Amino acid sequence: MAGDLEQLREKLQLSPAALHRQEAKGAPREPPDVQHPARSHCQLEPLGRDAGANWRGQLRAAERSGSQPAGLEWLGRSPPRLGPPTHPDLRAGSPERPRFPPLSPVSRAGSDPGLVPDHCSGPGARSNSEGHLSPPLALRSHVGRLRAQEIRRRRARATEADLGLLNVGGEAGGFQHPLLELAPQLPAVPSLLLPPDNRPLEPSVLRRLKELFAQHDAQCTALHMLHMDCLATRITGVTQKEQRAMGVSSGLELITLPHGHQLRRELLERHRVLALGIAVDLLGCTGTVAERTATLHHIIQLACALRDVAGDLFALSAVMSALQLPQIARLEETWRCLRQNHTESAVAFEKDLKPFVRRLSRGEETSTPGAVAVPFVVPLLGLLEGERLWDDHEDSCESLLRTLGAARDMAAHTGRYQAQAEATLQGFQPTPELLEAFQTEFALRLFWGSKGAEASQAERYEKFDRILTVLSQKLEPARKTET
Image 1 (cartoon, one colour):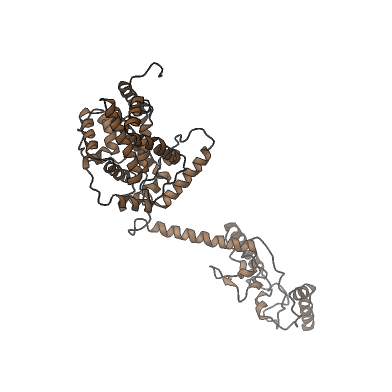
Image 2 (cartoon, rainbow, N blue to C red):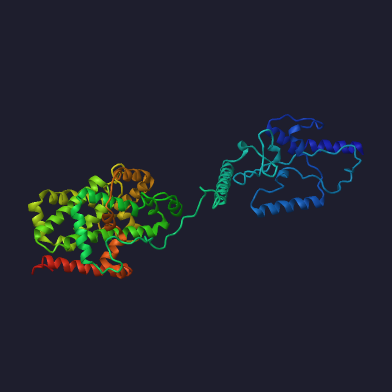
């Protein structure tokens, strides 16, 4: 019996499959009694029926879970024997047990990098989270290495996100979700110029405003507008609480985000009422043509100061929009008198300011942070709010791309705009009444009254456009050839 067992062992050990594997590896054939230490754990052992069923069940469960199988360390060799021996010659009292050659390696290129045979484990092998050995990175396929790296990156990102959410409401500097503003925040401060229940275009208030503008030159008025525009766009004067509510540190970045809808609507409203205020200032001059010309000259000087002194391109565009309204552009006598008496202002308006604002609107002129405190954001506001921006011309797509690029640069340099605004306003002593005159809430109440300011936006602007037309017709009645 012992001789038969020895012959069986030699046949199994010197089988063609074993010889082929040894020759493929370049290793010489070893005697049957020599055991290689690196492959000693790859020897097959008799497998009981219950153990085999259990092993297959574990592999199926691991494949359904989508993670690395728990029994993957037995790939390429048999799991330990858990049941009684089935071979009649392999009893507990047998002097020797046959050593079977290891199974051929299972190659699965492009699949899970962990699915490699266990005989590849060695000094370069690593241990995974379950304590099982995984093959070294050099033996994995290229696709397998990429997948393993992607899995590690996803786990790292998930861990960072979980840690960030744990800090919500905990430490002072923890992450907080930004708040979505649904309505404008109106200050509960009594007005210095308007009575509690004022009528639209109160005559006494209009006279007081003319006195204030006459007492301040163009540069001082431009600084007052810059101060209020910085507060309205949230460039300066933003508290830590407001920054946490916005999710960013500046309104210039907030207007580029989805939850900046309310701020975009407020800035568009402010741009319109500033233009209407300039128009009312000019069309409200019911005196001689020389008086209107002097007012127009002062407005053009204000536009130059907004660009050259204050660096407020937002207010500059509002002033230029007012001067190009149809109700003002039709005042031929006023513009003729301006060219005769204030030639420099007329040339600056036609040859300098109008082309400059046109280039800004098309994105051809950049708002350099070093010289600009409030950038030109009107095209971006109209774009993100779905309003029409440019006329139908062949460069509309290029203008769109330039506007988006300028918005990206603006959001990346918010700190430089803030520093420029603070440097320009350093040492500035504002007049409280003139500051209130440039508030958006004040303009709404002045133009439409304390009750009419709550009406719909489209209705308000339609009625006021008719008022401006009537005022323009009174100043210079339409000729027969004018339609």
